[in-house]
Length: 278
Image (cartoon, rainbow, N blue to C red; front, side, top):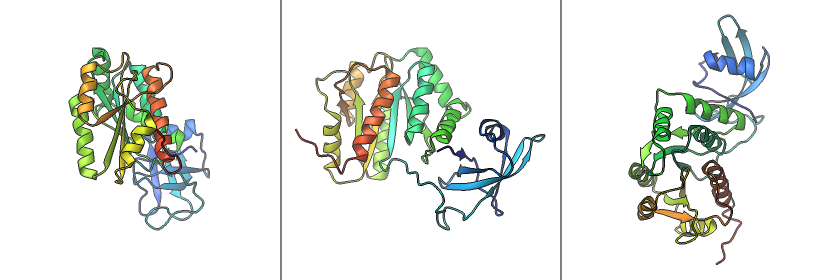
């Protein structure tokens, strides 16, 4: 389901004014005309059906007006599709890969409903890749944020995917520990590892974490080209990350990210209907 991700809430009259690049998306990409309806994802994460009530091509200005019952605090509009993000918050710690691959990984993560994407500067990361990740994750660079918005608009994700600055591995682990301390959740933090030794099957890692009985918060860590350095593997294990090995071919980093996210989300979503057996 396609949606339009709004940057602001409707005014007291139920109107939302759209200009600039957002105007181009509605008029040129979705090709909406006056009277057409569109699903709008508001900043409070609610979904609202709105009608294009006015289009001024000269000023590049569109006015959207709420259609039907307003969703949110007053109740939900029964005509709206029901879309839910992952029930268990999910973070992606991605070591800085080549720029085109990172663009793809960020897009796929947003489509999957990842809550936070954290670029990580690791030993095996090329200097140019780290510099690019730092630039694109900075607040004044809009490329990855545009990619996230476009991915949410295409997929209909209700999750407002956040983008962290590019950090060191130590800072990444500290961010995760801070999140767990603030939420009181049990951390299910897994790092994809190309070797069998010292690693677990994914379902075993999920079963161990869920056995504690507290709410879960999940994180996936994926290396860049060349994987994760041995000393970094040792470091993340000391800081609560479990190594997970998939008994498949060796995957490229951009493939490993989407493969890992899909596998982890499926294991978490179906947690109540599968039973781990040794």
